[in-house]
Amino acid sequence: MTAPFPTDDPTWDLDPIFEGGVDSPQFSQEVADLGQVVADLRERLEDLEIGDEVDEQSLGKWRAFFDDYFQAGARAQEAGSFSRALASAHADDPKAVRMPSRMDEVYTALRTIRVDVQAAFRGLEDAQFSAFVDDERFADMELWLRELRRDADAAMDTGLERLAVELNQDGLHAWSRLYFQLSGRLEVAVDAEGQDRPMSLAQAKNLLDNPDRAVRKAAFEGLDEAWRTVAPTCASALHSIVGTRQTLYRRRGQNELTEALQANRVDEAIVDAMHQAAREFRPLLVRFLQTKAKLLGLDRLQWYDLGAPVGGGGEELISYQEAQQFIVDQAHKFSPKIGDFCRHALANRWVEAEDRAGKRQGGYCTSLPVSKEIRIFMTFGGTNSGVTTLAHELGHGYHGHVMRDLPLSERYLPMGLAETASTFLEAVVEDAALAQAEQQQKLKLLDERLMRGVVFLMNIPARFKLERAMHSHRAKETLHEGLLTELATEIFEEEFGDGVASVEPMFWASKLHFFLSQMPFYNFPYTFGYLFSRAVYRRARQEGEPFLERIDALLRDTGRKLSDEIAREYLDADLRDKDFWIEAAAPLKEDFEQYQMLASQQ
Image 1 (cartoon, one colour):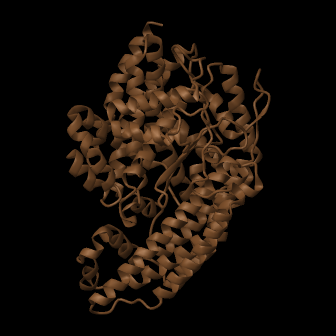
Image 2 (cartoon, one colour):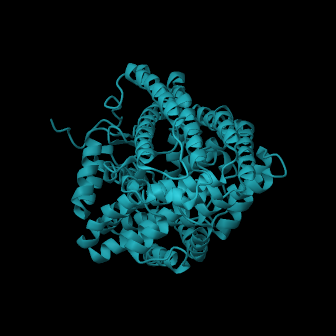
Image 3 (cartoon, one colour):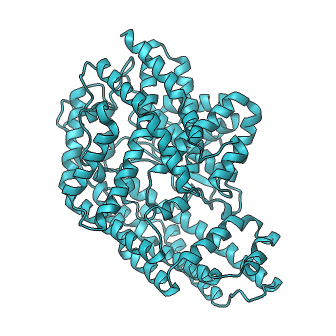
């Protein structure tokens, strides 16, 4: 039976993963089963070794072990995604909030197994390592093995690495969990007409796009006050997260960027070239912000004015059904395969979009490697930006869909490349809306597109600078709320310059990305993904169907090739060349010219 589309139910269906929600007996059984699976893996690993000469029998045993290790990881990811989904959607339910912690022992056991696998590959002679990567049975694991060997040679003593894994569960990662529990329960008081009920963070954030300046200001002040009530705890969490990382980096001979660069399969030269290009567009984006201020009748924008709608249609909310239909229609025109996927995901309620209290802030898409499905979490507020966010997350979902049948060893996605399909689909939907828009609506949509340029080329680089500053100061003093507020204010004022009259002093606390204990520097990959996907989109527009056929191949390669290899193969580009990034962002100049012309007619 075909599911109805568009669905009028904005909540997701998690029963196909595990039935029963927080009381799911299937989930409980899976957690228990995984405990036994990883125990068996550990026992098998004790009998594996790499001799001076690697023979056929040894290679066969290692391949069988890796197959089961990857499968255990996939099952753990599936169960972990389920538990995280419940905690995200029901942050006001203590039982739901505790769900992710039920996976702690499984995750810790898998991480310690990886430590012991690293130990087996540490210090291998080239001939021993070549026996693996040159064997066709390990063809799908070549990049994974090379990265394993790299990490093994940089690791601390095996006993210390095991100890770090075990301590991090109740130390480093516990601080992250504390932040999410704390923020998930925060209520925001918005003191504005018609907005006098307690709100979740996500609901209050949606009001920052409200056409009524008084509502925006009240939402901003309510959010600021809410974060100030928990600022000391948030600062303690950051102090401990950054400090723990620094201790581990020092022991491994790394700096604060090493882990993030390696996880994203880029090097510092690539990130530097990208940031240099971003700085080239700062004057244009400041002029845009100044133009927007004039449109709003202001001398300069306050921080809470950044999301203010301009042009027509600012007061009309878009229904969830309308958003679904528009995204699917436009995606299908561009690529029937992408459109069909979006329709299937929406019709089968793979999306949690309900606008209600009791949900965590933010949005994400998670892949389910066992069921080969995806789930999307967001709070849809009925705005154009909500439509764009939904399209963005569906793009992530399509990326996972394309990779669903690849070997598990090739499904790891560096974050920068993981933004390719998401920002690509976002651009498709955005261009379609612009093409259909009347003059006033076109001004509004151009404003939103240029604001995304502000986010990715100004805001994200500011976050990168702020996180680096946290590391610099943590090495010599306590990261307390006063210092963090001062750093955030100073860095964002420098980055935005004359574009705004004020910034968000509590940004360091409100941006959950700083508290992701397993993913440091969860910022620069967004700029990477934004610009890289624009380059891909431009190539698709230029070449049409022939390149569209290559997009799926590009997406599949994101899990098995380095970022610069993909750029060379599919875009004939050098990611260390600043001009590549400048060219990717160049359409912003035309957008601003159109924006200025329309603004002058107001």
